[in-house]
Image (tube, rainbow, N blue to C red):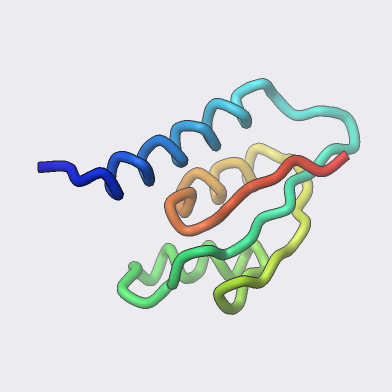
Length: 86
């Protein structure tokens, strides 16, 4: 049974994927902020967060818009907040 919190999290993940599906723009990137905790995540999720430059909760980093970065963001979309940067 899905709770309202679970539904809200799923909606957030869907929003991230929808925004990113437009395709890479010229010189664009994303500011990713770690909002959840990596505790309880898999080794792969922790490694992905490190690749995105996120060390602790609340930290942000700016990453380039590449297919590899998009895949990383999708893998941990439930733990991060994504903003588009020009």
